[in-house]
Structure formats: structure tokens, C-alpha cells
Length: 312
Ligand code: 8YV
Image 1 (cartoon, rainbow, N blue to C red):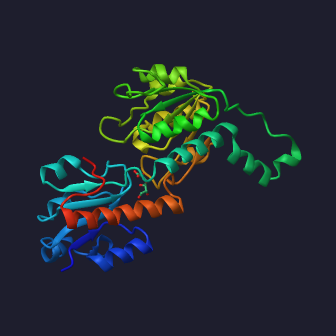
Image 2 (cartoon, protein in one colour):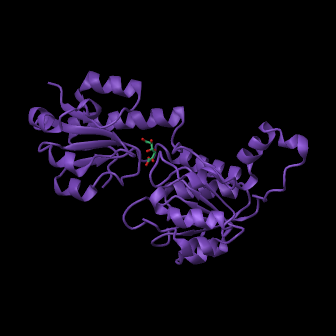
Image 3 (cartoon, helix red, strand yellow):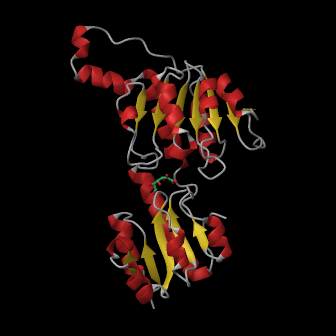
């Protein structure tokens, strides 16, 4: 007998097909009348497949009395209420370990692009500006100071990349990371003031909402750059827009936004920002690994009662 799943969002053609081969799958996008849907299928659904940007609203969890497992593509758990899941004894898995390298690569790509102005210079060449004069000088990357906010697995990989660029590295965390060779700064403003490039890799949750506040941006200063591959809401976006437009910081490289895919029009108009469409884990190889793990977690759960890579 096939177990019944609710799929919250499209994943990939391959994974969508594999899921329908192994399970009876209801797609949330096909649901027209929620009340009727829950009445007809609510009791049968034992698993949910989703992705980090979609998660599962509490209202849906509360309508699935036999839900036992949520398998999420991604590591950000900000759209899944883990406390509610714990309370209801629902296991939750993320694709931990599968995307760290690519997210760290993307942080570094944004850093290099923002500081050396690659995207801006590309527009300059395409617009025929080069024919009228030379491109202004940019800022050196190598040998500078990198501040990492959230020295977890991704933060450590960003630091590893920065070592190849001879950077001095410091970080801010709730507590020092045991065995880390990097300088711990208990005070986030102090880290921002110390560094040239502040890279945000911390998990997005209620504790980190607006962590990068106006005062942190002020401390980063007019020669400083901000890179965010975490969640948009970790940065006070209004304060960031102000800081960028008033020259309080020099530039920003952003993969995430508060109301993505909507990006504030003021950011779209700025030349000192590099904007990416939340694509840090979006490589063919990594997405394949992530999707295999989404499936693996579901299969393993229904065989053993445990997910492979649990969120708690
Ligand atoms: C994307 C991410 O969510 O893992 C996360 O938390 O933000 C990313 O990997 C990706 O689209 C996975 O669905």
C-alpha cells in the first residue's frame, strides 16, 4: 500500500515523478476547495514534501491529524513551525550538508562581484560607456577583513574561501565555536566595525530577525560591504536601503529579500548592489543531491520510523 503525501510546491520533474511512483501524492497547487480537500484526504496524509521557501503553514499541519513526517528541500526552517512539529511528534528533515559548498560559493561570488563591481562593469561595457571613458577604480578584495555572522557549516566554508584570499577573519555567533581558528566577536557592532566585508550566513529565525540593524550597518561604515545568503528578514531592509542610498555603507550583494521574489524598486535602481534571485543552492549538482535527500528521508522514515537528516 502506498503512503499518502501532500506536496506543497513543485520540486523538480525527476523528484515529482519519483514521488508519484512511490507515494499517492496530492499537490497543494491542485487544491481548489481546502475544506473539501481536508475532509476527503486529511486523514490519509502522513507525509509532506516541501521546499524551504514554501515550508508548511501551521493551518495545514493542524488539518492533517495523521501527519508523521515533513521532508523539506533546503536547510532554512523559517517556514516550518518546529515547535508545533515537536509537539505533534512530526519528524522534520532538511537537506543538511548537501548545499553548504554551493551557498558558500555564492556568498563569495556576490562578494567578489559587489566589491569588484563585475555586474556594474558588465552593464558599462554593454551600454557602450567604455567607448566614452575608463571605468572608475574599484576596491581590493585580497588581504581584507572578513566578518562572518553565523559561523556554522556554511560560515566556515565562506571563511575557508576567504583564507585563499589572504583575509583576516572574525565572526559573531551566540557563543564561540569550539576549535575555530577565527577571532570571536561577542558584539556584532564591533565585528561590523572591524571588518571590510560582513557576510551573513546565520539561520533565519525569530532570534535573528532584523539582526543586521541600522546600528550594525552604521558600524560597518562607508567603506564596508554587506553580503546576505541567509534570509532577507535577517537584515532590516529599510535600514539597508537607507544606508546604501545615503552612502553609509559602500555596497551589498543580496541573494535573499524580505518579500521575495518581490525586490524593493529602490534596490533595483542602485548600482552599488548585486541582486540575485535566491539561487545560492541552485546548481544542477547540489539540487540533485538535495532532491535525492528529500526522497531518501521519506523512504527511510517509512522503513525505519526515522528521517536521515533531522531538523531537531
Ligand atoms: C532554497 C534555501 O530554499 O536551503 C535553504 O534554506 O534557502 C535554498 O536552498 C532552495 O530553493 C531549496 O528549495
